[in-house]
Length: 269
Image (cartoon, rainbow, N blue to C red; front, side):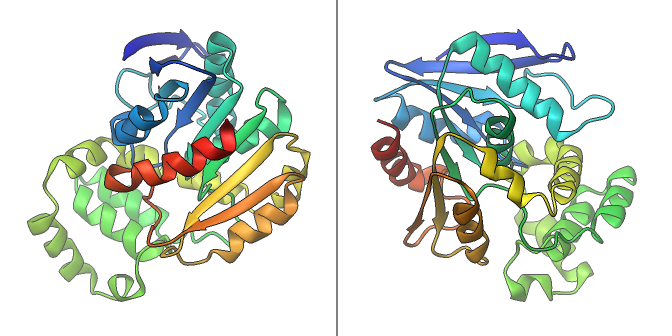
């Protein structure tokens, strides 16, 4: 992979890595994830596309979130990468999917988009966890902060959300220490800032009817709340929803990335 860096509209450096050959495809990841988490996906897709794997702001060689962080800054970042690469295809996971769809809503730069469980809110977004999460981060207690996220954000299995705070924090400190946690820990501050932006999109679903690109929505059969993606499909003017058996929210990562890549490839080519 070759590495490039461009400047976003506010001067923030945004790094991206390029590999493969074929039509240009931008890959944008989700919250609590860095570009390295999507290397298996990018590698598989690079057999058919020139893949530009973006390191979103607040990560790696890219610049910080910056003061006054908002979803609009991420849109600026994506537009800068698109202008530099000329890519007309895009793949987004989770928050990255929201960034791509928001970009496409206001700027017709993409022809086809694949969004795996994009963070477009349909139901009310839980926010009560954010204040204690920030307090734990300020106290240099990343495990404590993460427990508030797990129990309060609505994405964890029901049994886990019901576990006592002290027990779950202890279990995480003992069992969650590997490379995945080491990559995730520096992203905890960005995580709450990004989820605040998701909450700020509540009630704006109808606006995505302005997206002109063809969209493939993907979600895993093990993901709860799949009706939200059906509502997004029905809002978009040209969208298809596919449910992938056995996958969960993290389908584009690790061993299941090739399956996701196959579905994306069939739609994008």
